[in-house]
Length: 93
Image 1 (cartoon, rainbow, N blue to C red):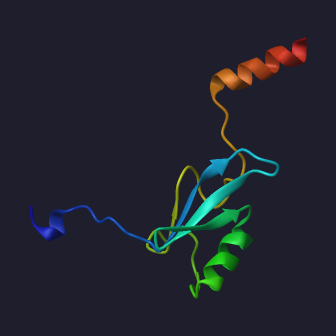
Image 2 (image 1 turned 30 degrees about the horizontal axis):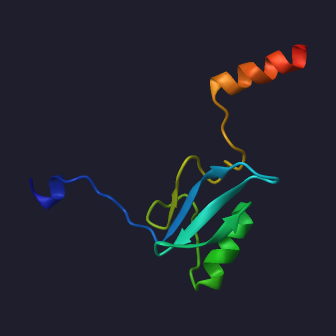
Image 3 (image 1 turned 90 degrees about the horizontal axis):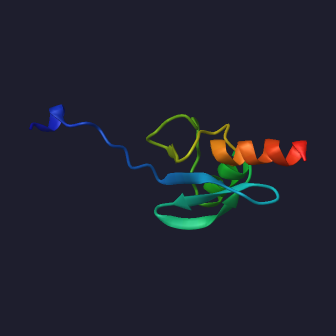
């Protein structure tokens, strides 16, 4: 396989992992493979990047940020279909 036929895989400096349950929910952020902390909003992501000297112009650029388990608009945990059914049953009493 030639290099041009290989799929391109970006390795961005910033990785924002999936939403974790909490009050409020949060996501873990990594820069250069190191955990830098919890973020709760897009603004937190931009601020943390700036602290590490990274200016982000486009949060949708996969060469800049990798969003795991959702995108920049995903800030609440996903629920499984079973969990939703349990919640409905609890409401009915």
